[in-house]
Amino acid sequence: MPEKQAKHLRFPLPVRIEHWALFASFSTLALTGLVQKFAEGIIADRIIGLLGGIETVRLIHHFAAVVLMLLAVYHIGSVSYKLFVRRVRPSMLPTLTDVRTAIQAFRYNLRLGKVKKPQQGRYTFEEKIEYWAVIWGTMIMAITGFMMWNPIATTRFLPGEVIPAAKAAHGGEALLAVLAIIVWHLYHVHIRQFNKSMFTGSLSEEEMLEDHPLELADRKAGVAERPVDPKAFARRRRIFMPVYAVFAAVMILGIAAFVSLEKTAISTYPPAENVVVYTPLTATPLPTPLPTVPVLPSAPSTWEGFAAIFQDKCVMCHSGESARNGLDLTSYQSLLKGGVTGPALILGDAENSLIVILQSTGNHPGQLSGEELAALRKWIDEGAPEN
Image (tube, rainbow, N blue to C red):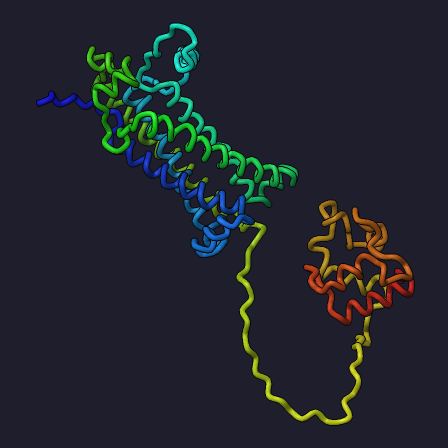
């Protein structure tokens, strides 16, 4: 019978649980994020429908984002504990040796000269690249995600242009991350040689010799881990635990603020329902009077009257330096000045005045009533007197 190969533990159970939680949150974020980025596509539209609509997709995306942020808090604590308390070597930090190893691997794979396969330790340069790409990507996604999740808070300190910029960066980084997983991680971990260490936690001696020969040599020499003084270990642990507890509490409160700071500026409402309305027929007395256009007896005829109407329905979007399309309706002079698309009104010509044209469509956010629009036409045709 062939001799059973020795197993070398690389990833204990907590590390494997963290990895699969990251896998679940990343996959959920990728799916729900990309269907929003490419929402006009047929496949994306089908997936959004299967998930229950765009609002449900956004809710799932936000939940997965919170899970990712909590994982980041846990990971910071886990790494800090290993480095400070257990005094584990910082073997995930990139070094100049990794640069030389990458060049050697590049030459070896392309058969450029008589170059041997590079010997690597606990983590290969490929694994370090992928790890730090995850760290960098998570930071980018968290910053840009905060900007889009809290646009009003963001624009209190930064110009409004950062919101569409954050959206572009968020979507681009997401696409890059998905492609990196498919092209880089899938090949190195599942295609080139199926690595089962995140399932079993261990690698065989043959697999260690193939990918981590220097770590295998350290294990056999008994120098893979630094010796730990129990008293020093206990002292460092007493220092670390309360400090990390405070840090974790602050970070969790920050995540809570991240989520609940404000309601996003865009809300999607469900489509209107078709309701059958029953109206009994009643006899109409003859003769039926001709329809007339009602005009309020107190219809405004000067700027003072229309200022009250604009204040009620329009200045939410059209006021101050941030007025939409540059049109400020808070004063008579700013009304005559117009906006970036031209004059808002043409004195004596209501039909060709832009404000009348937009209001006549019937679906303007600050829509005037029929009586108010009729009075506005009459006021403009009369020259729009101020007093």
